[in-house]
Image (cartoon, rainbow, N blue to C red; front, side, top):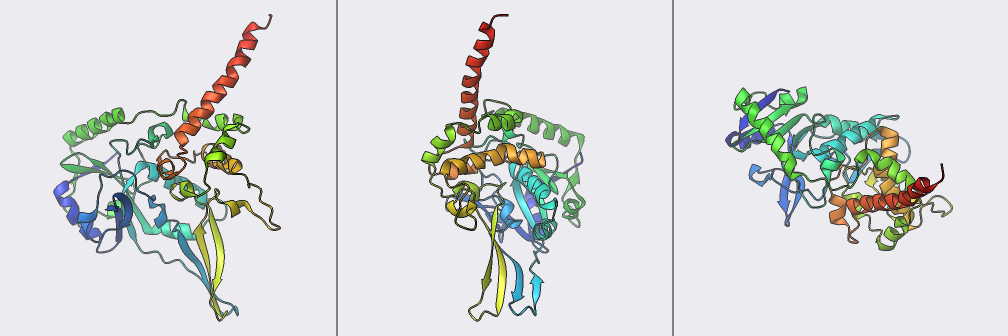
Length: 357
């Protein structure tokens, strides 16, 4: 892997150069929390941050997006896709893995041309996490605490300098004409290796089982009483799905003007935890119970996405746990399912051992 080295003193100048030809977004502090927003002043960029409130997916799948503009008489119809060139700085590795899942989902079958347009307009500059960002994160368990692909550039904080791993030609282009970035020397590579090796001591495992067991655990737990218990606690606010970097469910509506002449087809984020989400024509709701919605959410994260795309649907960022007003956390849920599964297996195993040969 080839690395480039940039002294930290040169970093603000590089970001300002990027702003000449791109919209530059990155993490900044707002009301005591961190959000991804446009960086108008490089002093606002905060790279040493805990998790952002919303993941950077909002620049690839906006909360509200116009898909089509049209006239109701049929004389005009146009696709609305003109995303501006954007550099997203400081993306944590868990969010890189989430976007890799999006790339796979939105490129299969009928390719989502709006997502693809956003994806092509975005240059992703990710950041190696050197410490866990919250007590709710379990990225090491989910295999997302580091990244070897999925980015255009990947930064590692070495103290006095940043090391950059170049992932794509688009990423390499961000250095064109900038002369304060250098090829890494052997001494730099030694520091990089030491930095990466030392980080793992700051990332504890929080799941009581291996993530590869998760799909089978969830399958075996389909009728667990825990789903009813979670249903009793859940407020159906949908906060968990709104902050999730891998949730992508949406609703599509047509909005027309008062004169009934022009209209827009609009896509908005939706949530499987909301009552109306699974309601169909005739008023039937096939996931009316909160317990069923909670089960669907965890099944989708730990089993259905794995079955469909070969990738787990949770990256362990912990945003949903922080946002949940009822204190439902994926670590607690998964570990409780595991404990109950072990308790169910123990008597069966004892019966086998006691059975006559």
